[in-house]
Image 1: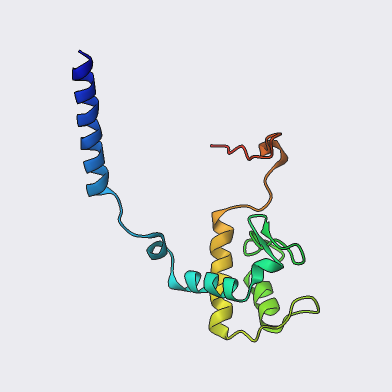
Image 2: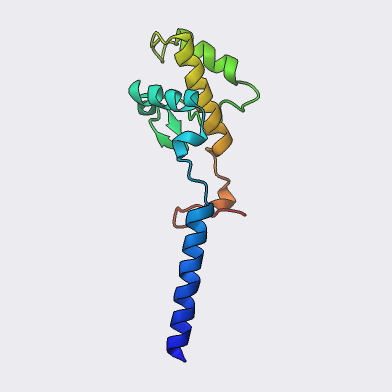
Length: 134
C-alpha cells in the first residue's frame, strides 16, 4: 500500500514537472522589461545613485527615497528631469545626455509601479518583518 502511494506521488510529480517545463514562459527577467529601463538601472548603478538615494528603503540617506517619485502628484517626470539635467546644491550635475536622463526616468517609473517605499505601520511585525496583505 505504501509503495503504491509513493509511486503515485512520484508519477504526479513527474507529470507536473513536465507540464511546468513545457508550458511556462521561458523569457528571462531582462526580456520582460524595456531596454531603456535596464539601461536606466545600469546608469543608476554606474553613477552610484544609491549612495545618496534609496529604493525600497535601501540605500543612502543624504537624498530622498525615490521609490515612488514618478507617481508623486507634486513631482513626477518633469521634476526628475530638472534635477537630473541641472543638479542642485546638494546633488551634482552628472552631465547626463538626454537619452540617459530619459532612461533613468524610465527606470524610476518602473520602480514606482513595482512597489512602495513606505510600508504602513500595521504591516510591520514586531520582529521588524513585513506582513504582506493579499
